[in-house]
Length: 201
Image 1 (cartoon, rainbow, N blue to C red):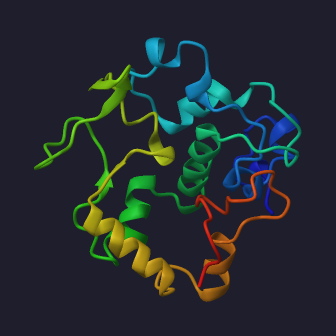
Image 2 (image 1 turned 30 degrees about the vertical axis):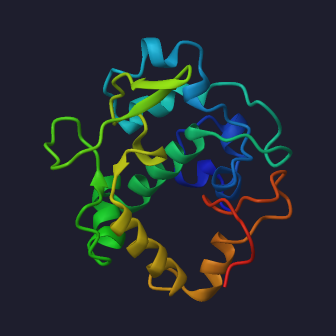
């Protein structure tokens, strides 16, 4: 229930004072996703940035709607969540992931993607074009950041799923919260970062 400005005091107060962590997690903040900005992929997506600098790209943007009133998927919201993690812990987001999730779960084939790193058997990115596919254009991984800059394998994702369901990551109460649809969210099949299909066990 904490607000953006509780953790990022320099964030614009006109919006940061009324947008909560809950809003960010459920895509009900009203913050426009930066990938929806006009010409984002043509003009911005190839240029590296730091979290502190990139937050300023969208922090002053007008909200699409009053926080909590609608659901609209927003990469900006999840970028902010990662930035908050850095401010709270004093550590890079990548390091926090390693220390709290990847290393304890032995997810050795999962990590923060850096274009310069050689990854054995890395799968390239593709996008649909007509009835076929083409190579996706280059995207600097500093921009997806905590909204999607990870690589993984099916086996590692299974480890994550098992750990979540067996409460190795979160206690039963928090697991239930994460994996339950929120009644105040206008998308009835969304929890905290998860699409909900059926009742969590």
